[in-house]
Image (cartoon, rainbow, N blue to C red; front, side, top):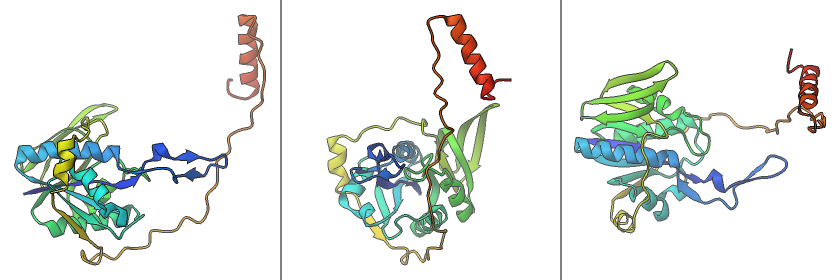
Length: 256
């Protein structure tokens, strides 16, 4: 039995800079395993150990995702092996889900797919649901307290009205919440062991997947906020300052 956990090798947005015109510069950013995916791998490792399953990491991206630095970074976090599809860079949610679904089916005997809460680049939080629909498997998102006995997945979700407890029969897809576990940083022993673990690199053609057109971004524009009125309020007299603030807010239509 296998458990698949998806992960993404992408540029770290925390190292990006934003110019005055709103353009984001990633030229100095380094690629990393997403924090969301590190949590997913941590959860999946525990599930695989408890169920006696092999944990396989599946990544969809460009050629960089198949480089040793990328695969070792993921394998050192607890994967038993990795499968990388390295010719689907910048694929949208639908294409990524289709490729992962084909990869899962090619592995055979997969009982569970674990994903992170969101992707590092787009953050759409749609992959798990789209993947579940593509596979035709039951799916749960925002999961906490996840457990798997080899046949049934149980999890909790925190909703505005309370805590929801869910049980899904395998095979299933689960997207774990960003606080579902605390991801541990790999030690030197883990990093050295990662170099000896198996890595399989495939193409979309190998999996029989033809990437579909998901549209093209034709233009972008920076959002402009309301003009500042630059009203100065003298705070020497607190009561007078409060009255002036209320008057200004009413004039702006913020207060009735």
